[in-house]
Image (cartoon, rainbow, N blue to C red):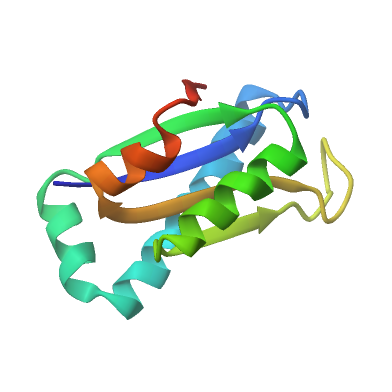
Length: 116
């Protein structure tokens, strides 16, 4: 089974619409990366219903820590920097998506994080 994990910074105070937009950017960017690197995984995830989980961290350093853990495990990830047109400063790291990837591998890295 495959899923995608989206990790969002809760400390920025982004509104619901901004959270949705940022997580959408991350989801699509990571999916495109997996589609290029491992099209079989991307296709299987699509056929399984595109399972996603959205989790939160409390700081930029925590976000980067989890991003590096996932990358070190070989999981395709995409980090999102905001353009700064609305609620946060330009270049602010808002979130990242990992996968779609093996559900067990994602859970081993992100399993202690709380749902957004």
